Image 1: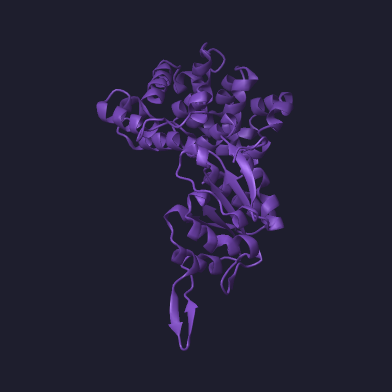
Image 2: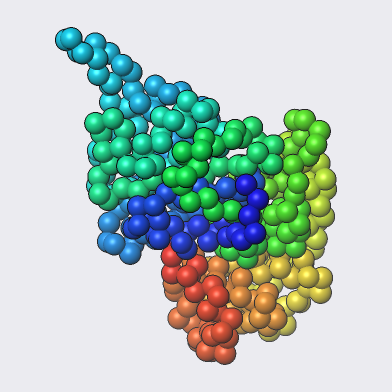
Length: 362
């Protein structure tokens, strides 16, 4: 399934409406862990906002499903036999608008591919037909990804639009990660080690953890719940074991380097007390960690001080902190230093405008 052209995972949310309204079925194919599923959910939020309706997502993980899970059971009915209503159809009947998301599609057995083929072509299973406000979308990994993918049946292949998907843009993923409340060090790591997070190859050795946006998200969730947080994790054997188990030993070593750099950053309190004199870190990864620290910890009552400090950074650093602040709370957008900075950097902000206004990814 190699393709000359591709989209990034975050662009799924940008263009899924084309498939939703045309009723044509995409098959988003890309490496594991690049947030394909997350951005399908984001797409539902955006489509819902555009039509003024709640668009739900009903996920079906085909790799773990059997034919009867899709079609229902065949039971006697007098002199005939009929299929029972599939379990997933209950969600369809509850909502007039939605996306039936067939995840892990290439990992499905050929029997399951056959069972869902009528859903793809006609939007129906037996006598049950999707409401007009529903659309089908698919995603999965290719055979080359080593994720247990099967070949696609020829008639199924001809019923979908195969779209090659690569890892999301690092800046966009950081905006998403900030909305999830991940530690600022994790976001700095993703920004300054993009080859580790977004371009990692699946290890040849079996059962070896590796770093992807998904596994880094898992590491961030663990850090948020670990006693003492990420800083404690890197100093304790159980914490390091968890990090290595989530993203692999090599990426963990590089994440540790970022965390240790962050330990020496100026404190939030020092910035608030003297935004014009507080130190600007010199190293690129430290600078990025610093703007994310401010974005995560900033309080609205300190808006002027926080913005004064952030706009002292080069615009390519400041933009992430500025956008993150506004996404968290619109009140940050109304302080005078922010208004001046926005007026001077409109072209740079245009790239990120939709991530300020759109709902967050769940």
